[in-house]
Amino acid sequence: MVDDDITNLAIAKNDLAGVYDVFTAPSGRKLFQLLEKLTPDLILLDVEMPEMNGYEVIEDLKNNEVTSDIPVIFLTANIDPENEVKGLSLGATDYITKPFSRELLLKRIEVHLLVEAQRKELKNYSQNLEIIVEKQTRKISELQNAVLKTVVELVESRNNAANGHIERTQNLLGMFVDFLLEHGVYSDEISTWDINQFVASSQLHDIGKVSIKDSILLKPGRLTSEEFEEIKKHAANGITIIEEIEGYTPDNSFLKHAKILAGSHHEKWDGTGYPYVLKGEEIPLQGRLMAIIDVYNALTNDRPYERTLTHGEAVKVIKDGMGTHFDPELAGIFLEHEKEFANCCSGGSGNR
Image (cartoon, rainbow, N blue to C red; front, side, top):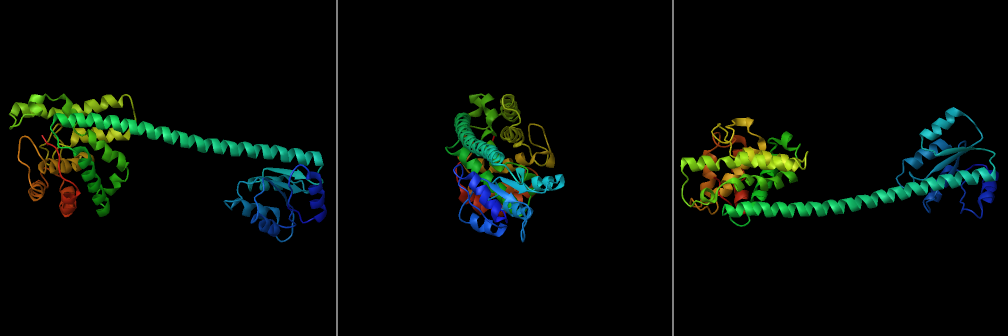
């Protein structure tokens, strides 16, 4: 209790003795000295005091993280609606007029301590609930990732992809995004993405290959024109497969990125790609990024139908494709950091 009238302090302490532990302070300054040693469950605060009035005291209390949640009941002999509104707006929980009766004072304190106890209980419940939800969400996410990885590895095994292709693709793509942000290239668009989800979604870029016959997908030699037309369908088929999954999990940014990657990573800057013959910036940025990573990954790793190229040879292919196959600005960033890409990882998959 804080009051500059020593008599009021003595009366209140006597009234509350035996029910509560009561600490008294004759001024706001003394209150703050007391608060350095203890944290009360409730403060009874006189409004009109010299040096520092009750309104100034409560402002300081509410601006301090340690004391901001302590309920404050104003004690006043001045019954003025305007002052009551001011006190309540500053964070007071109640007003008690002086002189007060012991029964009223005890009942008001009891009510507000009960409310505060319930608030703390609700806060603890909410925090515990967040922890439980976070744990369950993490378990579900781990399960989803395990299922996803199994499905993607199945797709890649049908294509005779080298071991570690999935992880390699994600590492290369993640590096590429970091370099773009470092140079401020397409950073406005990239900043709207959840980058972790975008990189993870690259696992599904070739999901459409599940629809391609083994006789074509695993053919050791060059494809005929008819066979190549058939394998080109995997891009559009990938979109269809992911759209079916989206039907069960709408508004999923992971799947939105995956669908874009599946359907656009074989488009070319000059409009000669597939499946939609998009040109330039008509091709989504995700697909333009993946086009470079997918080609580099394919050229530098084992393929059943063509020899593996050295890093330098693959870089030359990227350079020669600037402005035709690849977005020239993206390709420029890739070439500027080609040594980092070379050091990142090795091994990959076919790029039919």
